Image 1 (cartoon, helix red, strand yellow):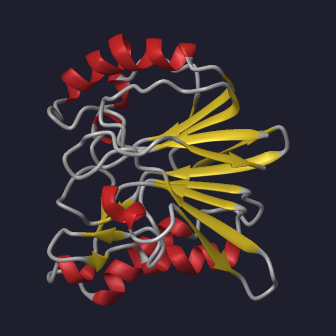
Image 2 (cartoon, rainbow, N blue to C red):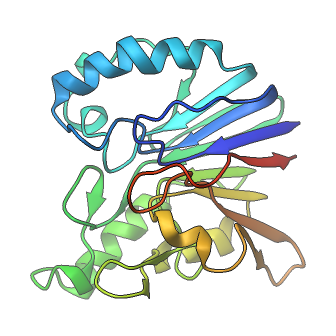
Length: 232
């Protein structure tokens, strides 16, 4: 099965080649306007017509921190010719896919749970419990995990507040528990510049999770990276 994956398109609807499975790992809407009615109109008038003509047999997507309409007002969302996942799964041709838009606190946008180091009012236990509650939902039989953000140390470099790894350590624990074939994400646009686009997480049983930062834009929201092509 040929997979094409992208993330952090921020309103830029690029041409997608023919594939079996097309996956978007969040931050779909333009970053210039976070108003719910603007996003509703853009999703209906721009995103849906584009999604309809993407030449893929199956289409899956999640929201991201720049897509607040998916968290705050789902009643405004149009119908999509795709599987939208929000802490939920879909099975496509015997491939189990789980998707979640949640990320640790980052600029207080949509789908954020507390992060201790950026929110002193939250104790470590509170922050850890929020992350654990989210990632404990990932089923053991997941083949492809789609989250908006990365795990700690895998495609998670950002220059926000200095060049640091800002991925989620609790998500890394979940990856080691579930051992999916692929972990697809974005969120930190510059994360893919820290070494290879795809990083291997080696498990103790000899299996490997390939962690893929699928962001297509840089920090100036300019498309600098093509879609990610995978096989499963």
